Image (cartoon, rainbow, N blue to C red; front, side):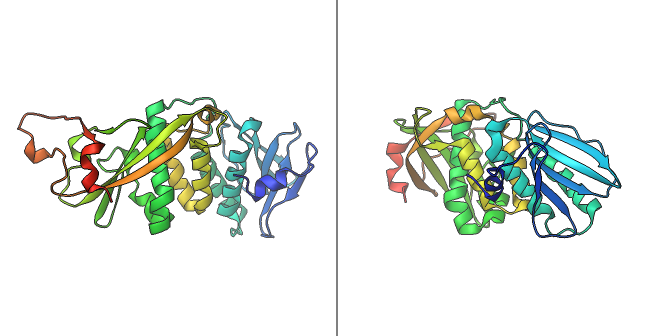
Length: 302
């Protein structure tokens, strides 16, 4: 998803040329290309520099010119330009109202350290099932939680990354998200606690069909980008931290996993819903996994 930063980078920049970003006269932020021709974001000001390590994707450079220092973030991998533009947008939004160089420098460092968790190219360590699971949770956030509750509450309610028993819970309602491959007619419940609650909740089942990489369908990286664009700077930081708990990164490898959304079903989990509970299991049994046949719970579908 191309933002305003991307449109600026589409301009004709020669190596070593920059344009000023934003209208804050107290802060010197620039976009352009470094001397090697890499897309870059620069901050120039008076501050006490600290050591900042580069990532595999973003090269960090600091140097002094006259009485000011320059902090530069350069993109090493052009395939990740859209993500780098979102990163630059976040740096700008996090500092656009700051007047003091030292405070801006600290804020830029903190934002970079958060984003660094996702800039690990070609790691692509998530399995097919993990990709499916994360897609379902992010789809639910995009389609239901953010429109109903707003980004802040949606993020606070999303506890799936922390491996809690419910994927989303807020006020007096909870949601457990399951994603199945098209054609499958059951969902796996991986613990007793996933559907066990004194409070009524909902089981959300997304049905996704895997397509060829050339199909114009749902991709994990694209959905992450879409959600990042919907969030404020502070929300983005929390979102990034939660994504990193899944070992997600901006690997282009994930673009080979393309899906078509066949459907989404919502089931009301109430007293007579077919599920196992802790109180119904004999003492001594610790862990239980089971599957629910979706054909047998049609009466609970909303």
